[in-house]
Length: 391
Image 1 (tube, rainbow, N blue to C red):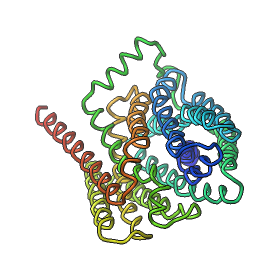
Image 2 (image 1 turned 120 degrees about the horizontal axis):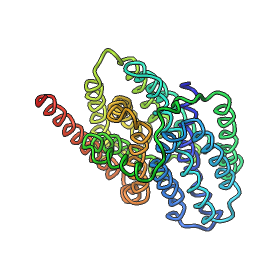
Image 3 (image 1 turned 90 degrees about the horizontal axis):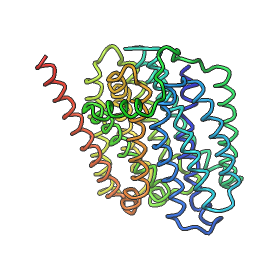
């Protein structure tokens, strides 16, 4: 189960990270500006975020399995379209179609875990998936850079198409339906609107959805700016592993620690340790940007420390958020994903390009997002303490 759900969730990182080394090649092939090529990432992320609002609601009404399998089929067709695109506009279109379909595995994987497991067992499985899932963003740009240099940028999308077809066959054979018919929510517009309102008007949900959004934005700055950032460090398209391997190693280490601490530390204690790592990584990163000449590995190692902390925080926060709505976990997971990836689309198209010109501004951006996330966590904790005292 963990392997299959992690494979489903890998489609998102593959869609983002694998083709990053090819930005320059795509621009040259289509005679497109760097901003036009950057929009292939933004359009994907906005479509990804928009469909986050629907994957959960559709699965709450029709079941988890048919939504996952249908989305995989659409994603395979979209990846094929990217591989044969004749201009930048058609690439925008098929990247948008990829974004529409790629998020089902990520959203519904969380809901499937919560359908079948609870407590310590759920946290351990969530951490295992985070651990396996972490392999994808580390491997994707390395594979993408190698495929780009050996076979050209179109081969990257052919490879994604082949991977998707393998996962589609695996899911068709092995993915169980975890939401029984009596537990499903009818897909009625009025009822759906009322359900969205119930979730969005819950103060605790808004805080818990914003916290991982800020955490992700802090290091997504470096992902969205990867070609420019690595060029400043003197790294070529063969060397994208210099950024992604340390970051994803941090994610995997944090997920492993989170899984081992399940049942030993409370979620609040795990989150506290995670924030200590995030601030340590952010501060070291800022000092390195100011005082250390550009180069590897010194400018990427602090990012690994940061992602250890972020990965420690994420599983506990997700479980706390999903438990706010026991009968609407799919919808809650959708809305959380929408917040995270809609902001990522904005980040990729505006904030990251503004900060990417300097190592110092990127480091400052990471620290600002971390401070915002921690402030939101303190507000959430204060509200929870007050409610308990009132009870």
